[in-house]
Length: 439
Image (tube, rainbow, N blue to C red; front, top):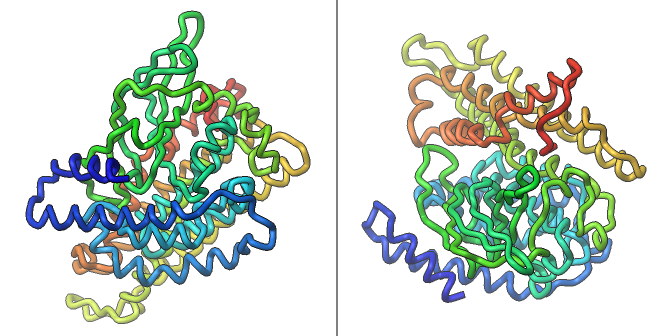
């Protein structure tokens, strides 16, 4: 633990804002120690059905957090990472266990439950919801790994958290028993609160196409670089990761082709229907769904302002402005529509795998395309609300501005670009073979 904190302190010295840096870093280290002190006390154990909270209870826990998330927002965005209290509360609420196998203390619930909680948190803080989405979906992928890898992560502490960066930028060398990995990855959200990491890289074969794999590394094998300076989603703490010639045994890797074929090593021990879904379907929604909750939060802020606002230029009340009234109706209807589609898609997926069936390629590509549209659509919806609140809306203390900035930052994720996967879907309808297999 001391070594982990020293690494964080050392890498943070690149902070270009030196005032009170020492005291801020010390406080940060103390909070990290406190969180890990809590989680390390939780040994892995199979969860019984009567110990699993209901979907309604988990959403209730998320909703009770909203006032605190709003109160901490200024600190979180100034520090460019979630406060330790927020991470501790999410761990204690069981949010990171929703997609985790029951064998290792998880709830093993349907993805709809996880995304319901994520959208609820995003109503107050999209950064918090984004970290939950990314870090919280990793128990699903880890459940697909060889059980030896699962045991290393969860065997003594079922609350252990895992961050990621799936950019295929690492250098991989095949060696006896596994691989040597080196490189630098970006955008590892919530990484400072995690003790393991999932990193994507390509293995270049002499006699075939490159093979995409995810490599699982413990905290001692990588460094975190504090370089997350952005206009939106600052509180995600999505830092860079550096690895120098780390050894990864074969069993701590996950083949992309196994995830596509839904034939994963972990399914030998995690036999429930949840883990028969394509991994890509869970992941892409983890980086789009927070935007839906952010639109709801922005609309709530818009309504609160609009009920009282009177234009200083026209003397007209916003609540009597037809454009504002129609925007509120249009936005709420869009939120309901996006939630309904999300729930319907996963209802269909879970019903199919529970019945022993397989999703068609058309379904998989269509579901992913629908997810990819969410980020841009949500950003546009909030964008339409902004000018209806006048000049005050652009101030940094405006209740709506944070949602606008965060939603526009989220659309930059490659999985939220509909052009790529849209070309695949449209091509299939016109008789072409799909070229994108992360579906």
